[in-house]
Length: 280
Image (tube, rainbow, N blue to C red):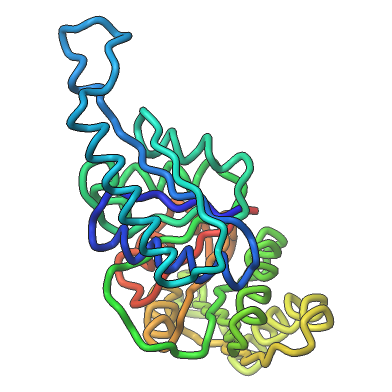
């Protein structure tokens, strides 16, 4: 089952469309969840006071519109809705227990405000074990390409598996991108590096990561893309020609600390397409 969080914003609508399309491709049910945080209404009141009627009505309206959008875009998708009291990050974390994928808008209203770089996406991606997809609001024509950032760590295996599946379902090309940089000490005087040897080693990193997956997905066309560049710059540039950018959550090397570190944050800031964070 795919879970999509909604709040009525433009980016929330884009997330619903993306989730509906992915549910159709994967042939799984879709659950639309609206988390209503009424904690600030309870200041000075007893803790068991429920949500005010205005919040309940607004939540039902948001869910009706989201459900109608799913039926409009993908009538064959089995869709259900659920209104839950609580903070969005905690609600989505709980919902993820039986989810194939979690989808959120990049920037929303109310509880999902700032989901791209705020507590919602960071909390969810950091605590759930299914892919978390962050969707921007702008519409772009299909590009026919999925991009996956890889390194030499075993933790990027789940991200590769997800990227291959997405590419196969979409009939898209899979660009496997490995961006690398010489360590800082390599620039010190007296330390010599054979650049041809380094490039050959980096290409071998990509081939080693692809070997097992390519046999399982023979229909997927693969582009090996090894660049001597900063990972954020390389991935952001590639995202401009992609329908989806996939990053692992616990990589090392060039993709170090990708979940909460500078690479993932940079990619989420600047990527031109939806970003999927896949936890090892």
